[in-house]
Image (cartoon, rainbow, N blue to C red; front, side, top):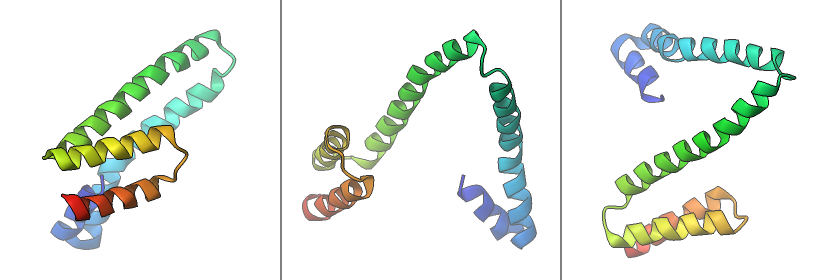
Length: 113
């Protein structure tokens, strides 16, 4: 998402940045606004709770799949995989701020990888 405006800026300056940003973010933003309006309008309907309950495992699955893809790409050897596993375990079991976990993982990566 951050690359598209930079490419537009590189190709055509500020006008390219503006056009590429509107083209990238405009349609999804419009769809989001329309869906959120409908979501609020039907807040008391019983099907909304069913849909919402179904979206929870879907969202969890997408987040886990994204995390696995990022972990696989960033841990090409067993040491880095161990750091990723440690950071994941700490994030899931302790109430640590994510920036501390990232900083610890970066430090361990510099020291042992």
